[in-house]
Image 1 (tube, rainbow, N blue to C red):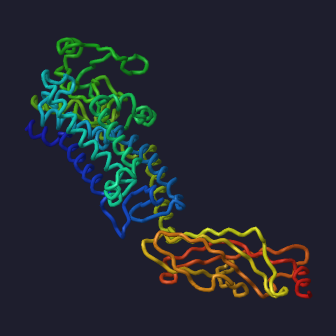
Image 2: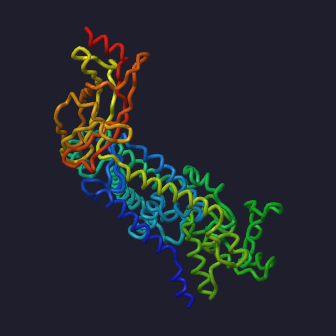
Length: 477
């Protein structure tokens, strides 16, 4: 029964499944396209952003603040709820270390004795195997660097650029630069990256509370191994006992066998029995080790994935509390706002600028003209023909103002832009103010002639009408 319980509760294999799924998703996702659009692509080459298989122009980056807000709120929510669960279950650093240390060095090349012992050095006399391990990882690091680049340069462009590498040194520099960092990081820096470099470990402590889910040693059952500050109850980093015999002399009911399997298996080289530590990445290797040892004795593990309060009070953790609810509500609001803003996406872009001349009076005062510089951009993957209309503030047709130039709709190829000099004119008397020129608000409705319902934008601007007495003078000349 104990062995069956161990198999059911082992976390290592569950993590491996998560690692495999995340690896497949990260490698396959850049290749998936819907109508030529990617799930996520920040393409600086073509100045486009693809999000949820919708393409946005760089001028439409009003969505980026929502993405950043969601990112930070997601980190806060995840950390408050599950501690450094990202670090142990999804972080590329952790996944890469498992591939290199446990798969390549231990299982494949037998440089290390066992994945259950991460504290001992490599076997002596394995220099050649170590070089082979680094070579294998270097190949994987280049693939990882290319995969990272595919979220900035789509694979279809990436492999086309590889045919002429001399013309794309920046792209190749990034790929090999990332690969070089990963080689150094995974083979030399190792878990020191998690402990000393990663900023996430530094900020997580302010997000923890007594109900945060983490790897917790039950000292009430196992016994107190480390001395604690009498005032705060926090470990001072000094062992109270150094053997099972000493532990039993202080606490005869202590269940910890002092096998230290939890210490040997820890990738960040900590002793979970000391209490909550910033170095803990919630990989739960220690829980698996303790489950195996205590399971052989017919007892449950002394290390649980639980909250400190829940372990002390022998209950289930409280997932719904003020912090998690607040972060959850804020995250939901940001997500709804993101989707709402994404539905307002414009399928063409239009910028309107007025010329230096406010207006011109033509045909002896019978016509007033306003000139504009309009930049039209086709953000779609197919050619469209564009034109526009002049509307009032209530979006009804402004019949008194007509389009003098251009007279006809004009074509624009896919992902191209064109600058047009647009002249609007009127033969009507729009104002009889003799004290100043009149600025009349108008709306320009630009649209694709072949798809006017979907590809349409509205832009506000003004039509300047001269003082009435100036107009009269021009007419009387």
